[in-house]
Length: 117
Image: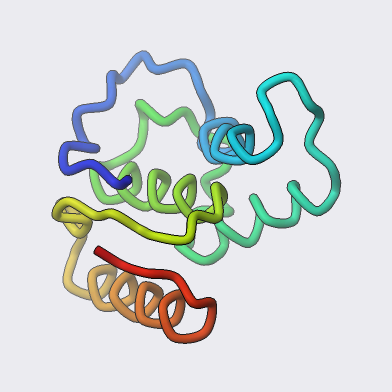
């Protein structure tokens, strides 16, 4: 699920972008299991897919609204769901980023068999 109001993340939120996206893998593995190299590659690919790899060490609270939105999308990709449930997913994105997002959703649906709602 991708919520609507991402930009309201608390500026003091202590997690880095990488840690936040990484947390998307735990429901697949279990909270007390270590992530392996495959998980780490999946996290990196998720961040790269939304153009956030270079921001991985920044705190979530220090990001712009559009960057926060992309970090949440990367976390959603990292969790590798069968269905993406989106609520105004492009809020805070500029026109170019919106186009990239919709291309990414199209690719996920048509090449990876993901459902988008």
